[in-house]
Length: 103
Image (tube, rainbow, N blue to C red; front, top):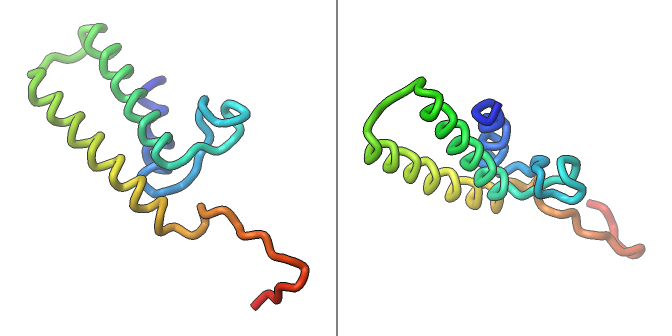
């Protein structure tokens, strides 16, 4: 289950989209920032992986795994910030005054 939650949160996060997380207000219904979604996806990935390893489903080198997770964390966090700044659909709408003209 944890590994399945990685996909939607990670994809929305690195795309710069807001998406519900347990940390939003109200929890699970409000929208969290792209960066929060990336962090939540990474937490789910780590928990899922730990459960995978504890269940003796996999074995491998710890250093390679640490570098792998660090690379994913750095790149995905950077992309979430980058796309969050340039994607206009995620910006709050400016309130128009009564004397404003829509162009």
